Image 1 (cartoon, rainbow, N blue to C red):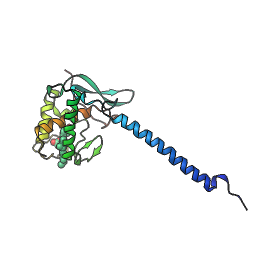
Image 2: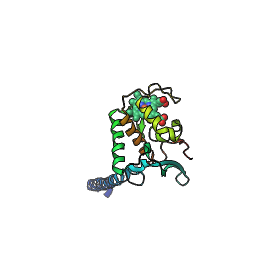
Image 3: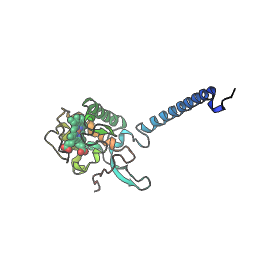
Image 4: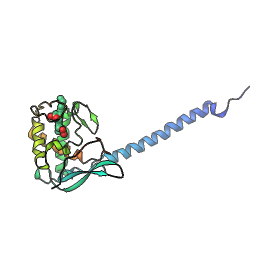
Length: 197
Ligand code: HEC
């Protein structure tokens, strides 16, 4: 009777399957914890919520060859400096509004959502808002009632979603905070507004 080679035996493949499954499981668990650490607010790539107290600049990183957000001078949102807790509450208000109104039915945030309307990840730095002096109020006004405003080449309009003033301010805080996230250059080819003065 011809004996089969070691690599063709059933027990070899059974052991291999067990080892591969076991090692993959350990790697997945480690990666999950590592990802959680890297996406938590207050980490290197995702700044703490109080980042909205500062100017967000967008600089080209020669080494990584991508645009990265950099914390600039103190420039509190709506002219009022917030504590970490107050900033978190305001950003959370914006996040809840964005979820409740299902903004990603049309928009994308960090690449999640639909492609009907512009990606909002760096909307805070969009040159459309004119200057950094006009931006905050323009954004609040636009989010509250965008129905008769049309500013991009898509020719699509955003409907009035009945967002209140307080909610719109939260959304702007959320978008400012979102623009501080180091997204490895996403979205590509984004040109930030000039903010020097
Ligand atoms: C039915 C689709 C739709 C929904 C839902 C929607 N938007 Fe829009 N939004 C648009 C379109 C289309 C534009 C581009 C319109 C324009 O340029 O005038 C836009 C533009 C914007 C802009 C300007 C983006 C930029 O930087 O150019 C912001 C900010 C914005 N939306 C926020 C929101 C928020 C916040 C919500 C949820 C409360 C939301 N949108 C829900 C369609 C939508």
